[in-house]
Structure formats: structure tokens, C-alpha cells
Image 1 (tube, helix red, strand yellow):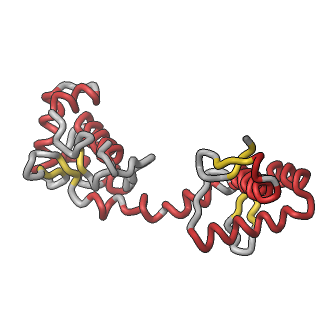
Image 2 (spheres, helix red, strand yellow):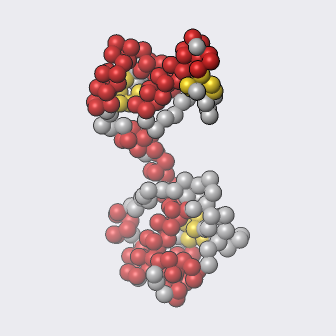
Image 3 (cartoon, helix red, strand yellow):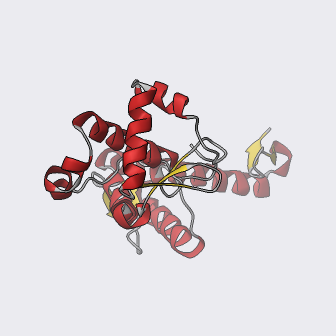
Length: 206
């Protein structure tokens, strides 16, 4: 995948066009299979429809054919037909590119917010700004550990995410980490000889 690119988990296929469109008579069955594979390769590359290596340079056709486990002659034939029908184009450096990629594959970008929400689908939503996500089990563990101080800890995280754009893989782990950090600060204030700065600048016990 090209550096700085976004690898796609899926690509869009227009069902009506695929089953009843001009591709049915423009390409033979085995050529349509190759065309679908090329679309998937472009999605994996993540460079706006390019089929390229990690530096954005063209891939040898022999390499593509080997990766798709097809004869090179079939690949060449499919590419030639797709170019003729303006499904594929060649960049100045000979890199293959799916024509009108952004127009046909825009659905992936549109659904990004929904994919992010789906990750938290089974978690409860907490905090003033509704941006702290915890499973029932995580919430109960935190409630047992922190008792009546838990709401304050959740609000601190919620405000930090909202005001400073903090991003964390686990809000449960973040609340625990922030608690250890705060205890380190308090301990250093009360008994500085027992604490020193840790790897990330937080105060930890010697």
C-alpha cells in the first residue's frame, strides 16, 4: 500500500450496472473477474484508484498477473479492453488507474463516521459531551474501584476529548491511567523524595 494511503476494507459494486450494464458484452466472464480484482487492488492501494507499489510507482503486469493467479495474456487483454472502454487509464508514468474512481467509490468516505460509531455500538455513552464509551462490565469495574468519584473522572475525560481532541483506543484504560497519573502528582507533592519523573513525564514511585 502506498505510504500515507488509506487501505480500504471494501469497494462498492453497482449491482444493476454489473448484472445488466454494458460490461456484460464488453468483457468476457473471465475478463470481468480480472476487472473486479483490479478494482480490489486499487482499493487496497488506497491512492485514488491507482494500482501501484508502496511508492506510487507502476506495478509490472507480470507481477499483477502472478498476484491474481491468472495468465499474463488474460491480464493484458482485459487491460486493453478496459482502456478502450475508458474504464482504465494510464498515467504519464504508466501507472494504471481506475477511471472516475472518486465518483464511483465515494460511498466509502461517506460511511467513515458510521464505521467509527459502529466500533462503539455495544458500549454505553457517558459524559457531558456524549463522547466517553464504556461497556457495562468496564463501567461496573470503574464504579467498584472509584465509587462516587467516577462521574468526575468521566467528566474530566469527556471535557478533554471535546476541548483538546484527545483520541484513545480504550476510554476504560484511559480513566485508569489518568488516575495513576493524578496519584503520582499528588504523591510527588506530599513526599517528593519517593517520586521521580517517568518515561512520559508523569511522576512515578522510585
